[in-house]
Image 1 (cartoon, one colour):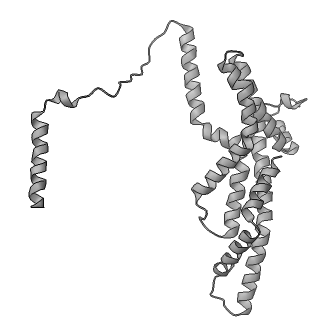
Image 2: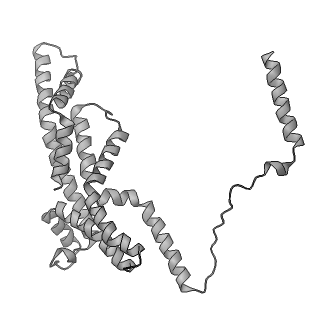
Length: 252
């Protein structure tokens, strides 16, 4: 009986499709968008087109810009070191680690982004300053942040390798020289923090391994026994609170 109802239902749908006019089904609800490339006699139109292309290019590399010029590098590297030190494999998952690093970066960078928005973006949208001035005022707080976190030795290395004249002040340092120096300094700082994170967990691994050897349990993996003690130690000292606090304070 149930199968007969399914057959009748399908037959009704087929008859409806066959006898209802095609125009009744065509509802023009989706607009048609056409993008073409043609000749132009107005140089201003060409300039606007080039600006749109440049904006689309910047949007496509926005994640890279976020990584290169913010606190994201140090945070994600330190969190990766923590996960390896705990020997928890993929716990927390990669999505959680990246999300935590991303939102911490938003928190740390919010004063600089607010300054860039107030001094550069909003006046430009209001027509008070030119595009060149807007770009300069948007980049200025980012350069201030990177200069605070960049070591002089790393900056001197990049300046010497570029064979440029010795800058008299920070304003004379090109942004494309500052960014790689900032990246090197951030990696060095992150590795230093990672080393400090590893020390207590290595002590636990050594104690567990020595205990197992003294008991003659050679075939039992020490990691299996030390993992619960690592997690217990991390929870007892409120490790997430200490780590996040130390990361945020390290940027001040």
